[in-house]
Every structure is written in structure tokens, then in C-alpha cells.
Length: 439
Ligand code: 4AD
Ligand code: MG
Image (cartoon, rainbow, N blue to C red; front, side):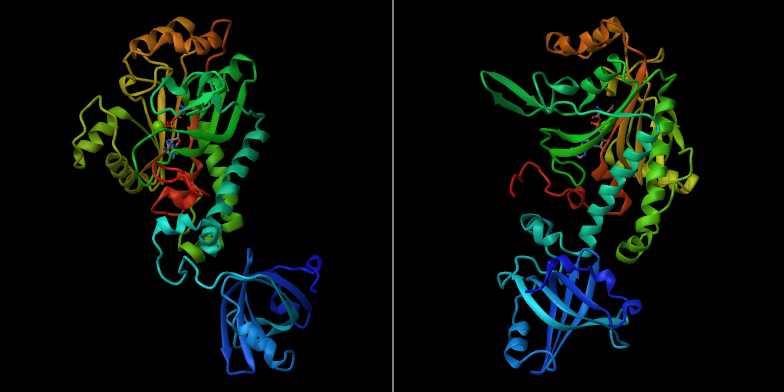
């Protein structure tokens, strides 16, 4: 038996550790027998892969035959000696002394790692699909994006909150909500923590954020929409304008990308051929008034007062890259007509709100919120919403509430844009959409 407690990872296998004993465990990526007396095997773990050499000095013919025929992707443990080798890509290999099969793979893999398997088939077999260096890296970066952002906010005295996802009345005012039976009542899955994060400010928390799942019964099937995603939400009190919120967001993002670049920059270059760029602060800002002009000049059919489409977003992304050499842009001052009832409105009928685009795709919507009870109720009425259903929300503003604003950011969209992935599903562990409920 090989003692797993002695296990090292493949990053231990370096010329520096020449001649040291090592125990490794992982998936078999490749097996290449050379005649009857020699087998080369590539072992992969989370740190990378390494060549393992099985020689006839250390194994009998029966063992070498067994090793040659272990199905690819089986999990093995082995004990051996690190050896410098001019013939290996990494300049180092492991000469195996002992091995043990921990878990055999079935012989015919549903995914072919060497050719392009379609995304659907990959998602059906996600646990195998995610074994590649590239796919694992996406999730290491997603994890770090969330955690570096969290680190930034905690340093700045934000409180992390946890709001319910089973709720009694639809969030965001109603559309695109999943309904579920709840004992003798109807309940809904939260579309965002919008109302409850605002409640935290009415409770006097001043600065809050939440990272949690949200659910959208959105029947559109696009490369940037899913029906369940992790949302990064933030809300802060006593702002003088939504500019204060944008400042926090751009600082948080720049902090996080800087840390990601320090940790993963080299690997991202190697695996994705992307040079991560730490964005300059402040990010460019463009008002919708200017956006209409830019779009009309660049072939869009948009009319003043309308919302921007995904094609429009792409055009703006290209414009901003050319004009400001920047990947990010805040678009501000949207017509209130195309925004949510809870966005504060100015005297020109614009909402005090913003979207943040990253390489031409929306990753955030944010705003200063209407915190004045009467105005909020009348705005909901103007939007034609069912006021009775929103009564619980209006109550949050009845007994004093500081002026405030915040944003919601989609981390999977963020990583999709950072790594130029073609579909948001690549950056979601197990995506949910209209067709996809399993696994
Ligand atoms: O723009 P959204 O819908 O805004 C809100 O939820 C507001 N409550 C935010 C606020 O604080 N004002 O969603 C926020 C972000 C989007 O910019 C996008 O990145 C992501 O969430 N997102 C989605 N990601 C994946 N699939 C979907 N169906 C998404 N819908 C929104
Ligand atoms: Mg939005």
C-alpha cells in the first residue's frame, strides 16, 4: 500500500528535487508503452502533469502489462524517484518504483480531450470535462475573483450578509420569477437580493454585500444568460451620488484583477494566451446622451430613449478600447423609463443609475436608490406594479432610511469576459438553463 499521507503534488517534481523520493496521485492523462520493457505515463493533478517512467528494472512483465492497459483517466498512486531528464519537456520525470490503482475509469470516455467535444456533451459529463488544466483554471480564477473582491470590501468595513432565497413575493417587481409550492402557500425563488440588501441599510448596517445564488425564469437562451447564477451584490449608505458606488466598484475590480494577475498571470498567458490588464482608475464614464450619438455614428439603429442592445454594447466596447484604451466603461444616466422603479430619478427623467461593461458586455447594473417612501411608492405605481405585493418592501422605508445605492455584478460574466470565453456556461460549475437541469 502506498501511504496517501505522504502524497506530494506534481509541482514537487522539479530539477531542484532531483533524486528525492516522491509519492504522487492523480488521473492518468496518457499511457505510452515502448515494447514490453518500458511504459511512459503522464500523471495529472491540480498542479499540472508530469511524466512517469516504468522500467523493467523496477517491475515485472505482468505489472508492465497491467500498467499499459489501465484505462485513461483512471486514478492511481505511485511511489518513485524524481530524476532530471533532458528528454522530458519539463526537464524532469519520475522513475516509478511502486504503483497502486485507486479507481479504474470505464474504458470509453464520453469526452474526447484531444478533439473539440460540443459544449452540451461536455456539460453532461462536467466532472470529466473539468479535469483539464484550462477548465480548472477558470474556476480557480472565479474563486479568487470573488475572494479578492470580498477581501477588498471587508478591509473597507463592509458587512457580508445572507438574505433568504425562498421569498414570499417576487423580487425586482415581478417578471421572470420561479414559483414553488411552500406548505399551504406559494413562494418564489429570489431573482436578486435587491430588496433585502436595501433593508440592511434601513437596519443601519451602512455598507453590505452578498455573494449568493439568484434565479431568473428567463426563457432566452444566449451565451450570457442562465437561469441560476451567483450574484455579487453590494449596497452602501450615505452616498452623495451613484458616483460613490462606481468608485467602490472600480477600486474593488482593479484590486481583484491585480491580485489575480500576480497569482495567475503567467498561467493565463500560457493556457489562454491572454495578457491580463490591470485596469486604470478611474474607468471611463459615458452618459447615455453621448452613447446614443456614438451608437448612431457607428451603425446602430437605436433611438433616443431606448435601452441598448447586446450589439450596441459590443460597439461601445470597441469604441472605448479605441478611444480610451480601456476594457471597462461605466454607462450612466439611463432614461428612467428603461430602468427599475427603485432607481432614483432626476429632474430630466433620467435614472441615477449605471451599467458597467467589460470588453463590450454588461457585467453590472447599479444605481442610487429612491429611499423616500412617498416617491418610491409613486414610482412603483407609475411602472404599473402591484403595490399590495410590494407593501412589505415599502415598509423598509417608512421608519427612516439613509440615502443609498449599490450594484449587482455577475461573477461568471466577469470571468467569461476576462478569459474571452465564448459562453458563460464555461464559467459556471453546473449551468442551469431552459433545457439543462441535470446533472
Ligand atoms: O442587471 P441585473 O438584472 O441587475 C440586478 O439584479 C439589480 N438588482 C442590480 C442592482 O443592484 N441594481 O443583474 C446584475 C448582473 C448583470 O449585470 C449580469 O452581470 C448578471 O447580473 N446577470 C446574469 N448573469 C447570468 N445569467 C443571467 N440571466 C443574468 N442576468 C443578470
Ligand atoms: Mg442589468
